[in-house]
Image (cartoon, rainbow, N blue to C red; front, side, top):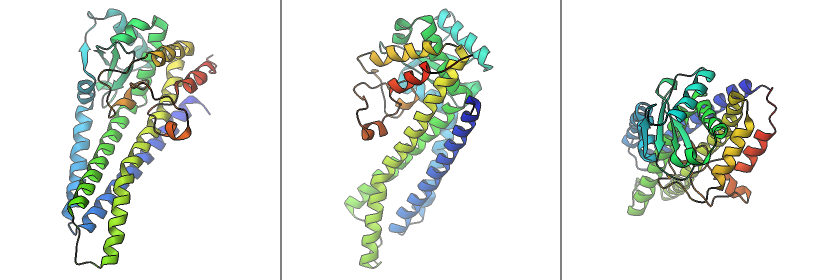
Length: 299
């Protein structure tokens, strides 16, 4: 199976996961509306979901950059970085993305935007200080691969859906604390509905997060391979990942909502030691990624 075939398979799987996720949102909203005998809950949930998705589509890059504290630069500020992005974007056949800098000593990077024409690549000052040119090219190629595969839009949409599910669940659990539901229904039916509602409300954020993480992890491996193919030097990205992973401190503005966008987890102390720990990591273990990169045969 070729790299390009794998890209198509992963994109189809991602859309399938998102479709299942949307159905789950509707079912959860219906449960809440049925439990409280108020169809308005379902209508409001659907409308709010559409509005939030539209807002996230049009302003995803601005939201991500603001959360990360990234500032867009021009070529005269960082000419060497800009030339690397220019050359690799041209090689990949992509429009030149905007370039942003995050003032932070922890080395890391991410890409955001709703499409190839509105993309932004952001890197930390620590990344520029600690990586040599070959390693920097590997990181930029990885992020450009995310742009080329439309990962940046999909990741943003999933983040919004996860947040919406968490909000619905929180609202439900709070309303359960204060009481609610149709008291005219049979007591047994009411108890069954209450139990199902509580279980779904507790599991919904977990299921949403697992979908988010599964998409993120799959795409990190794909972007690693595509980035290595772009530069023809997989060792550059492998060495860069080693340096990023060995840095002892987290990003100052690390945020769980955007953690999966970065090339490596912005949090430290999350080393995977067991299957349950690995399940909730936003990125595959760096050791696995490095092993795969060093096993690639680039002709």
